[in-house]
Length: 169
Image (tube, rainbow, N blue to C red; front, top):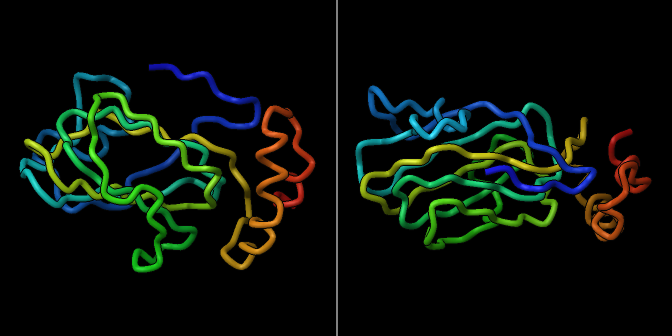
């Protein structure tokens, strides 16, 4: 379950901001734990969601989801907690395997919403968010991010990325 990370990216700490529902024994907090003996389950089979909040804003590189039984989902992100303004980074897509790794192209975000559209039942073992923390990243900086992002990606193997440091100050 370990994936090899590029020098500047790391597993990002997050908490559960909310969920549509959870069963009494399979709580949403279980997606924080890589132990496959626990999982989040809603006890239903359609249209449930979980919202994750990162400790600080980031450039999200990828999302790893270790799926238990979701068949189809949608993933959206946002820098501010305004779900109506979230950007879909993975529109409605199937979840064909247990271990799914979705590249997210260094998308600026603080919140990740995974909408589970079908499953039998809706259940996920764990979720790992991978990227680069950028303290102080705000939506107002989006034009700067758009300008610097190609340079950040081009130098993503560098341990210290000059272009990324512009966003961190």
